[in-house]
Image (tube, rainbow, N blue to C red):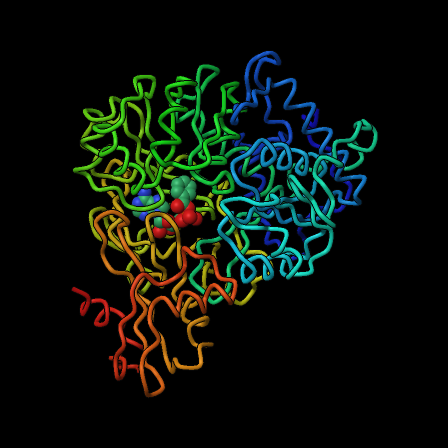
Length: 540
Ligand code: OOB
């Protein structure tokens, strides 16, 4: 089992390769204080070998079985020519294969690039290129969508298919007897990039977030501690496993490190999730606010026994205080607010926080080493209670997006603080309240839509002269997406046509506008930029 780090004399993933390392003084500080260790992502399976690690559909795997399967997949990837320092785009739904592929890759130092199942040609093509992916792992068909057809259209090298592989390599063919020597040769260093997460994005193209073994291991271990995970934890996964929240906050990996059980659900729909809670006696689940709202309603018309639930983590978008207050009464469990980001910083309300803080705030930083600043438009620090932009750096917050020097110059302060684009207010206790956003992004119930990315796709439509994308308030999703369009004379295209057009361009469906409004011209700010605040104010 890939437990400890290999020797440090081999070249690290990163360095001159587009990875921005922490400065040496911070590295020394985080190591000395014990935040960073030599523990590796491939070694997180710390449960009793005979206990159940993973449940998915009819499959139940013990820790010993999952460990063995991960090594076999690792060996299979090695045979395919994938190894230390490579990147592999992984786009799998919540299945056993997601877990074995993830663990197999990180054990041989090949970093999974975690795409969401909803991503399509536009996102995947770009990711494969940016990451120079050595392979691309997909299901055959999921949710009625044939991923093989997409892989074929993209023409990317080395496609691995979970299921009927057609002309591609079958994942089942990567089930190979492991060779301990070969595995050891590819064992990564804890300083290597272990996994790439996707940024929610504020620019025309998605960004890749490099997470090193040591920072991500700290992320998941410290989270597991704050959330009280242990071997009795039975954690239901309803969000995509590829999302940071479900993967490592504390998520799947935090459960494994604590010796508990992970139960995979295909979605958060009550008719799928509730029977699993009842059957497996699940006690923890992480959801986005729309799912929490749905569950609060659904308990009245479903009859599953949810009494095992003890903790509902809610994050990804703002969860209203009134709704948070209902969770204990209606669902019979505690609620925990989680304000996190794939870039790093995690804020949790604590299990012993008074109800008032749990309901009204989005938590406080996970680590004593998290540095948090709240600044005004000129970058001056603001006193507690005043709203400003959240800046942060720390032992698990990135120092730069992968291969994005120009964007990094804007997204980080000269002394390495990440500019989150979130507007927050800090209480004297350190708890943060999210008050809004400065970044040009729509938070659609936890799914992030970059306005610029969608605008660029809309501008490619022959009838569209100009486009401005804004969020509109929505009682369930928090926000939905509205595209204001200036058309080139004649009729504006209908919403359905716009969606077909975007689908044809291979854009993930959650990024499609929910509404379009045509205008003659856009209101402008004094410096001539589109005044999105005034546009948003027009939405009734
Ligand atoms: C999580 O990660 P991302 O990378 O999809 O999105 C991060 C952004 C934050 O910058 C903030 O704008 C928003 O999502 N956000 C919240 C929030 N949690 C995230 N806004 C208000 N209230 C919250 N509780 O969304 C994520 C990553 C790890 C754990 C949980 C969520």
